[in-house]
Every structure is written in C-alpha cells, then in structure tokens.
Length: 148
Image 1 (cartoon, rainbow, N blue to C red):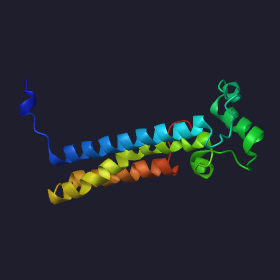
Image 2: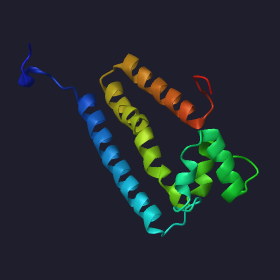
Image 3: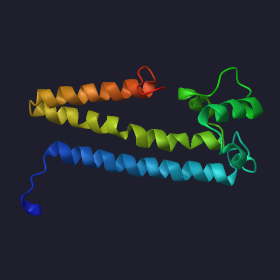
Image 4: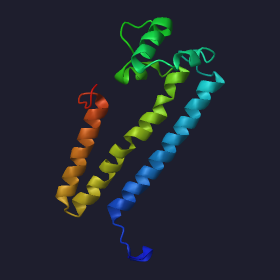
C-alpha cells in the first residue's frame, strides 16, 4: 500500500481541484446571498411564502401549471431556461447558485485543456473538449436522456 507522500499529483489534477474549490465556494456564496434576498423579502417571490407549502405535494408538471395559472400568467410554462426571465423574483434568483454549482465541472475541464496541450497529451485534451461539449449541449436542453 502506497504512503500518502508516495502518491504523485499531476499539475492538471491540482488545477482541476483549485477551480472546483473556488467555483464551489462561489456557488455556495451565491446560494446564501440569493436565499437571503428571497427570505428577507427584498426580492418578491412568484409564490408568496404563506401559500408555498400548499404546492409541495404536487408533481413538477402540476406545480408548473398551478404557479403559471395562479401567479405568472405566461403563455408557456416556465420550463428549461425560462427561469432566467424570472431572476427578478426571490424564488427564482436562487437558481443562480444552483447553476454555478451545476456548471463548475465545465470550467474545470476547460481550465486543464491548455495544461494538457502543453504536455502534448492530445488524447486527454480532446476528451476534455468533448466532455465540455456534451455537458454544454445537455445543459442547453438540445440533448436529453432518460424518459423525459
């Protein structure tokens, strides 16, 4: 069994970890700040806090139909990236931190590509670029999997 000091950590692992750590702290800070904006009432929510619990028992589709019918009155349900249009509302501004935490892996992969190219490790660099493309396409909603 290798000792802790015998384990070699390569440059791209350290860089990936550093970007991941900073992104995680930034995402958590965003969650705390936006949650404060929500619960303090500085940003008014779409659903008033006093009636929020009445929606908790619904599945996602019924919830979206209900809040659209009761509060938003939009032509289409707020699905996918429609939350970006609602960032002025307290219950949707919280999504910023979640989006940061969800997308930090993309930044981590992008950060190590130059390092891999300097090392002439083209196979791993290509895999990182492909991973970024796949994650970006999945986040965009252009590709999906599962039963949705």
